Length: 226
Ligand code: FE
Image 1 (cartoon, rainbow, N blue to C red):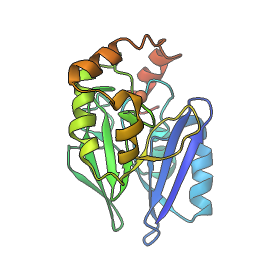
Image 2 (cartoon, helix red, strand yellow):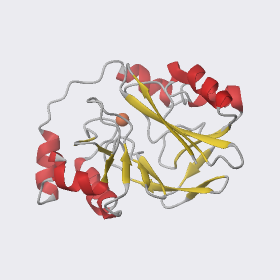
Image 3 (spheres, rainbow, N blue to C red):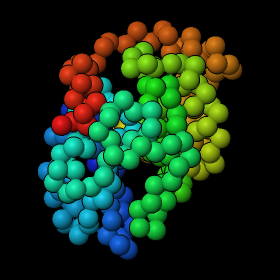
Image 4 (spheres, protein in one colour):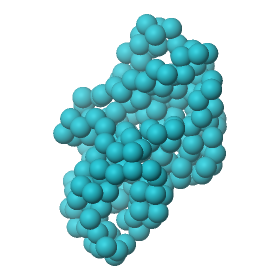
């Protein structure tokens, strides 16, 4: 298998490139528009054919490269079926599998950060979008976010995965690259709560600033960055 974790400096976004290496099919999760040429170059270098591109949710902090990648490579665009983005070609449901050569990637509906947030699980690798971050969790104060839904998605879905599941989030602001479900259960300060009410209390008192360019980014991303 080929696996690359790429980082966008401006928005601190992680983009993931996955390929089975056998049939040369590749998939990209959460591409950033400004970095599309870099992905195309990397695909060329690795002799891969991009067939699918996934956005975990409608992002507020960067514009997705999904449409541009589709224009260049003819890949299919994928999001969970709760997405408001009408031009998405393949809308996957909770527990549905996405195939990439011999690899299987399971879609998991995990609302909370946004109402359209999905995570994607490939064997022991969880691509958690902004639902679960390393030592943090995605904010729930815009885009139909809900701290109660986030609690359910995290505690009743993601934390039920095996402890050695590798956690690959869509962002990190401190240079962390990977964690595990077991580590987060023990150390993530947001997860040291005894009830949904306690979690909601934390999330409702974060007092975060509105992200820069959110209105522009969300409007662009509803059209997959086109
Ligand atoms: Fe987000």
